[in-house]
Length: 146
Image (cartoon, rainbow, N blue to C red; front, side):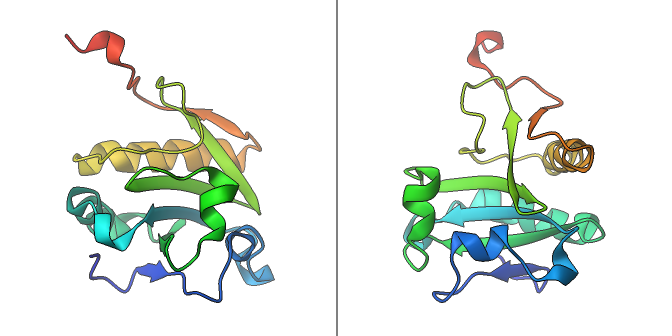
């Protein structure tokens, strides 16, 4: 798992509403939520998140959410994948158009640190401008993979 103090972990007493309605001090905070079943942890994504945590600490907080401990996320966001990354800003879920048809989340492991930082920065800039849907800097559709 992620071994850094820059990554917070949501506990049983938390719910999706705790992320969507953080304390007033965090009203401007940008959240990157890594949602996973601990037994299905994707170490590649964990490594990328741990490596970017220091870089993005000035504008984003990474939360690790174990959906076996916080089951409210399952039904609220239809989480069936072993690993999911979602974005939240000002009490709102920010969607990202990656060209895959699923604008709610990233449900595969990104292996490139800079690529993930670019996505986070793009989503953050769009969210600060009030956009609920942000276009990714790269198209991840399968039509360009031969």
